[in-house]
Length: 476
Image (tube, rainbow, N blue to C red):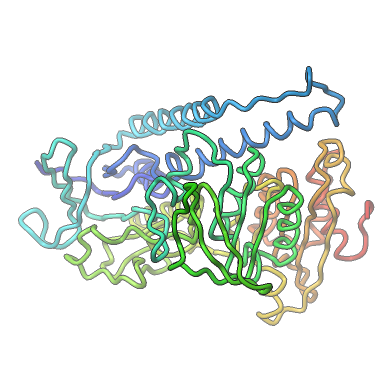
């Protein structure tokens, strides 16, 4: 059977389904080919389920600390029902999944459940880009389109000798499906995924060890943010090693069933053991097994090469999201999908500006940033001025019982333009949007400082940090 559409989208994650909706809005006939449920990794194995677990962990800790708010529990006992935690997570995923299915029907988008493979020129199409789809029942369908968008995402990267087995060695995928919490957890990788799981598991009462080969956690973030998060995690009992060298060949299962590794630190050799080992060392693109050898699409280090409009080296085929090796964030993938579709429709979308894509980390406290770090700004030749306000100077932060963290603003000393904003503290991932809007509108730091913010709110922290650029803060 042959299905003919204007736009075919291979992959139904945030990039794919956003592109599909935008294409339908522009009057295109659209088909989405997805081997799993619509929503992709973000909805089913990433953003949504992990944040649901993080919220449960946060509430668990909040209830344990409720006496500090004057709310005492009988006998001070707080029980954690991990089955209910997992059920709540799945209920959230299911509800959002139903919403996406409704949106596909609303926009008359055909969703084809099956494994797609790009084919070359054939009787179906004189050029490459048609997709052969193997359905669950073994039947085959062919989707022919004027344009194809590849949005197949990424998967967790593994380490030599540490192949996930679902028992001792896990990726974030298996962690999401735990039936019970381990007593101890060793996390390899101090990037975004690693620190989120460390924060969550520590809040659940798991004894966590976090190791990172770089000199500090979150090496891509501002160094002051990294230092503050490491301090907070250590205070909550997370054992952290940075700048380590892992001996992967030393991996073994000890007599008591624990996973064990040997590592070298600045202080010598250390023996690392835990019930479970989480490998969180980044992700690799799902560009293999797609049939791209049947096309002239160029692959670089496992990712599909694209131009500013998300076109591959075959101009009628586009690639968006993690699979193109760009910014590996759901909202970036969604925006790339819009760029691709609007380009297909003959509009003139602006290229994605990576400096205007906010980065959010859902630890406790949360981390959020946009733009350049201080080091990056100086390396690019800017003469910078810094504004910084501790969250403990903000009334709403003290009221909430979360005084840790700060807001840091980096501006160009010559032009007063905002170069970067970095936050760590309560609801930082929500507050960063104001900074993103300011940068989109190219507002000067002086203009941002003129906004009248309600009191008491956490949003005052950004306003005060901007005022601090000129020594005009009223709270610090």
